[in-house]
Amino acid sequence: MLRFEATLKTFFDRKAVLDAVDKAELRVLKKFGAFTMRTARKSIKEKKGSAPAGQPPHAHSTYHRVSTSKKTRKQTKKKRLRFRDSILFGYDAGSKSVVIGPYLFDRATKPTVPELLEKGGRSAETGDGYRPHPFMGPAFAKEQRDGLPRILKDCVTK
Image 1 (cartoon, rainbow, N blue to C red):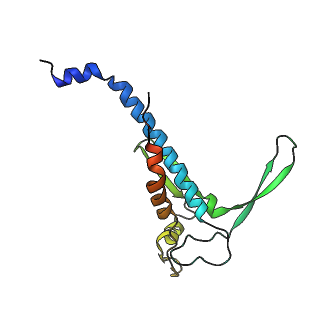
Image 2: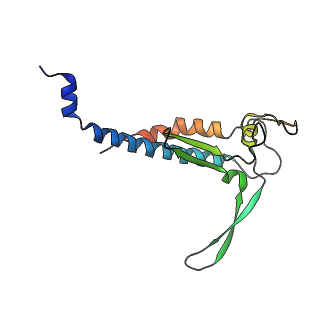
Image 3: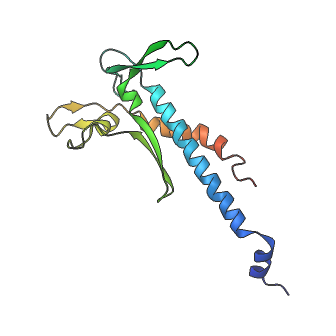
């Protein structure tokens, strides 16, 4: 009678399967990070004044990015929003996870500016109160609900 372990070793090419799973995991996490970043960025609109509580924040600070056409060599200025462009994602190979969110403007303040925008609260420096303007939580939830099943479908292949 064959033992299960012996059958398993001869039936599966374990290294190939584990390598395929690792490759798929990396691909899925990177796609999820990119989609969540895009959704969070799209939720931030350029408008004057502050957003209503519970809605994503409005962006105010802009800069111009100059790009040159390869064909015509013509330079064009594109208006960009600083806060929206600060939302990035990165894959952490050590923990096999993805980190998504805005980079910190000033680490000395507690809570940080992105934390105040997401959750609301009081600034330790000025004592000013901030209403919550969640933008990362809803983007994460939307991509987890709508995008992740699509990304996971048939993710492990030969």
